[in-house]
Image 1 (tube, rainbow, N blue to C red):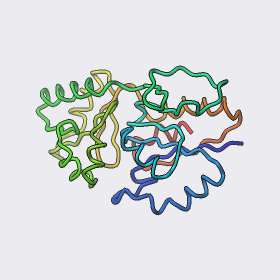
Image 2: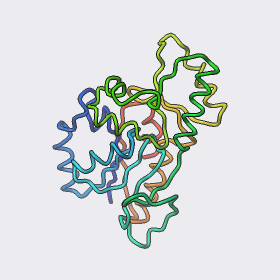
Image 3: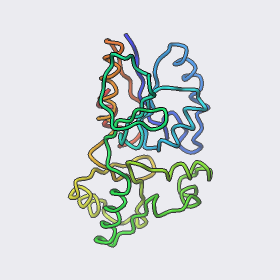
Image 4: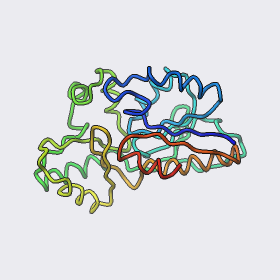
Amino acid sequence: MKYIIFTDLDGTLLDHKTYSYESAKPALKLIKEYNIPIIFCTSKTRAEIEVIKKELKLNHPFISENGGAIFIPKDYFDRGVLYDYSKTVDQYKVIELGTAYPKLREILTKIRNITKVNLLGFGDMDAERVSKECGLDLETAKLAKKREYDEAFCVIDPKVKQTIFTDLISSHGLNFTKGGRFYHIMGNNDKGKAVTILSDLYKKQFKNIKTVGLGDSLNDVPMLQAV
C-alpha cells in the first residue's frame, strides 16, 4: 500500500496568519522518512508553490490555482506510466484543466461593469495592495500576482448579495468558489478533478494506493471528496 497525501497550503500546511510551516515540520519530517509523496493542491500560483517546494526540498507534482493545472516533474513517473499533457514548462509536464487568466479577467471586468459591484481582483491591484490585503511580504505578493488559471477577488461592499455576481459567472460558463480569504473565478476545473487525474497516475505507478486529503475551506471540498 502506497500512501499519497494531497494538502492545501494556506490554513492547512501553512499557518493562516503567518504563512509559516514551522508547526508542520515534525509531520513533514515523518512523511519524508516514510517516502510518502505530499502533493500541494492549492489556490496559490506556480511561482508561489515553487518557492515553498524548494525550501522544503520536495520534488513531487503539484496542483496550482484551484485545479487549474497539474505540474509533473519530467521523468517523475516510470516510462510505462503514459498520460497526455498540454505542454512543457521548465522542468514540468503540464496538464492544463483551467481557463487562461486573461479570459477570466475579461469576464470579471464585464461582470463588474454590468452589476456595478466593486469586484477587486488581483489584476486590479499592485503588489503593494496584494501584500496588504493578504498579509504577505512584498516579494511573495509579486509571485501571487503571477496568475495563470484563476483570478482571486474580493467584494468591497460586504452588503452585496453573492448571487448578484455568481449567477453571472455561471452564465458565462465559468465556475466560482471561495477560499480562506478571497472569492475565485475559474474555468471548468476544481481541485477534485485534478486530484482524480493525478491519483490515477499514481495507481498506474504503484497499483495499490491510499489517498489522504487535508484542507480547511470551501474550495477544498472537491479535493476531500476525491480522495
